[in-house]
Amino acid sequence: MKKSIYQSQLMFNMNERLFLNALEGLTDDQTRERLSDHNNPLIWIATHTVWARYNALTFLGQPAKNPFEGMFEKFKAYDPADKYPTLDVVKEEWKKASTLLKSALEAVTEEQLAADSPLKSPIGDFTNGGTIAFLAQHESYDIGQIGFLKKYYTSKAMAY
Image (tube, rainbow, N blue to C red; front, side):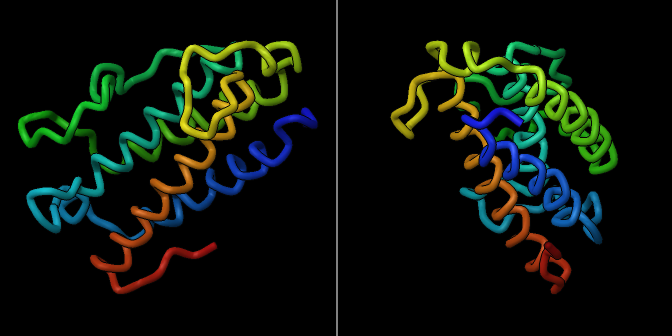
């Protein structure tokens, strides 16, 4: 593990498990429901989370083909006319992205992490390493939303 992103790596590793735990017991129909017309459905949040995990690879010097490219760029909001994947596809892509992310986190150099990031995240560290820290936090936030919705739909809390 790279010392400068050790904590981010721990968060990504824990989130790998929590994301799947948060989706356990949900149906495709439940993931497509909206609590209101100004909330995103769970499938939007879950797909967005996988999309973001694929994007994290870019900041680690290991860009990969993102299967959800074009769905969330430029802060694109939920559109009920868009076609979202099934929950099984989301889980499958999460596992693929997670395998790639583990490898990229191990391979990235301190020089790559210290380089200026094209994404200026709100945490104030504008390096690739800072962007990775922000993306780990962002992913955790998304998983928290998924966990809340899981409890709403299934009456069961997400397991750690």
